[in-house]
Amino acid sequence: MELSTAFGLALKQLRKQSGLTQEDFSNVSSRTYLSSLERGIKGPTIEKLEQLAGVLDVHPATMLVAAYLQKDSGVGRRDLIRRIEAELKRLEEAGN
Image (cartoon, rainbow, N blue to C red; front, side):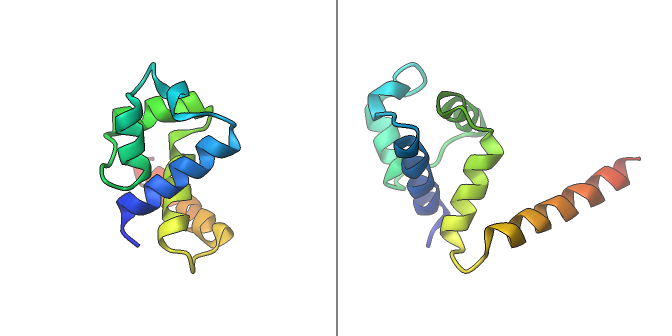
């Protein structure tokens, strides 16, 4: 699955789980743009990702992790989280 498609599915799932409509995002994007994101036609900028996450009341990283779980359906959530934690730890250690 392409990443833009996976992101769209994750966005739609998060939106529906939050009980929000596409119109509820009108302060950060048009309904047309949100629809194109959800259908995988477009991909968000990092700034738009942060705005969308704000409406959903989730961390932007949650949206990305959800997208990668959709994209790589064979990868388990725990395995992905462990990998991210290890990579962040290495990054943190390199900075010290």
